[in-house]
Image 1 (cartoon, one colour):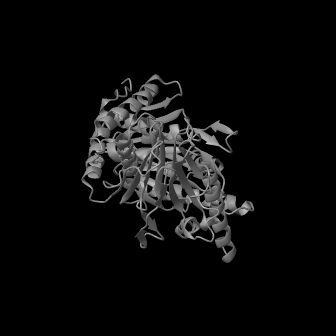
Image 2 (cartoon, helix red, strand yellow):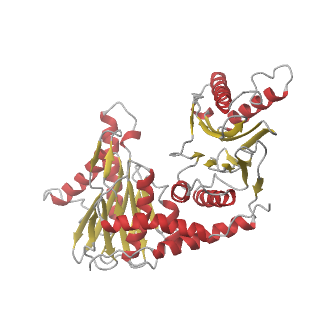
Length: 245
Length: 245
């Protein structure tokens, strides 16, 4: 399993992803699920991946090869003129990889499925955030739906719904994502630290803040422990149920 | 979908269930998923049901018919000598209903599955709480795992994990369950009010507090609105992420 979130704020984008992959509970590994590309002054793109690891690695490899090989530089996510075109290319690549892997084996395409979150900006366009489905099509975040989750989305969703605010600054948004990830990690063994974090300031057209939050990160433990206490205090602050007797 | 929880406290048991059933989003109905039986001074039993409605209604009908028809009063959940025997009987009835419905149709047993929570006390035994699987086997709540959820369990789980306390009294436990149900209702259309509530005080061997919380219940709205504010305050109370720059 996996847990990745892309948040759209008024001041830009924030991405967080876990790094645990597993094939059975006795076969776990750490893999990066966040990939960023940047041409300073021109474009910044981040991709989060959930689903079959062979599929998502193949998608990223294809996207990177296309962006590196001189002979075959078109189509490339570094050459597309807009985020919409990048999303179209990534979705097409994803669909092709799934179709190819399904052809070669006996199995239906179910096990090879993957879902992606794509965000970024290409000058002179606006900052955009997309969720890309295994079928290759995609939807875009809006004021009504300002964030996307992929993977194990349910445990961490209630706090996002309640505490998200489009005016948040990046440190607040990272704190929110850590609370959401903490609830998920506490409930699902297949989501685990370290977490990768990436921010993108709208119109900067450059790398923002990037870090990896390791399992022994003191701030994460402060949040994790503090959130338990804060939740219990919040719960205690609610009025008591009156059973009338 | 469905959401039901059975909590084991030091002072007894608390049950809550939603009432929404659906076959597609345009075919929704309200059905009771909580059923209680009591012989004052001797036994108290509550059953919560999630899964295929035809299956769970058949199980309850079989259990009730067996407890009513004079000729065929054995086996009856009102005659079993212990909660373990009741759980065995309920599990066996569930397995038989699923097997019977699967035989009659073209489909595998998947669509006919159901999962149950069973709790109560039979004199002179202790108060016990079980979760019963479609296969008819069951597990019992313990100090380490003091509550069971069935149906749409994920959204409402983090607050249960964080705020549950075995020393809670019944009004506190009902408040906790309402917060958990509120998070679930906010995220999944197929879980809905009204909610049924039942408490059982250990060793009372009688009905406890019973109520139905309707969609317009003022206390539920106080909790639902208050929880959003309390969560945001709790979140604000956590230390800020320091990106070091």
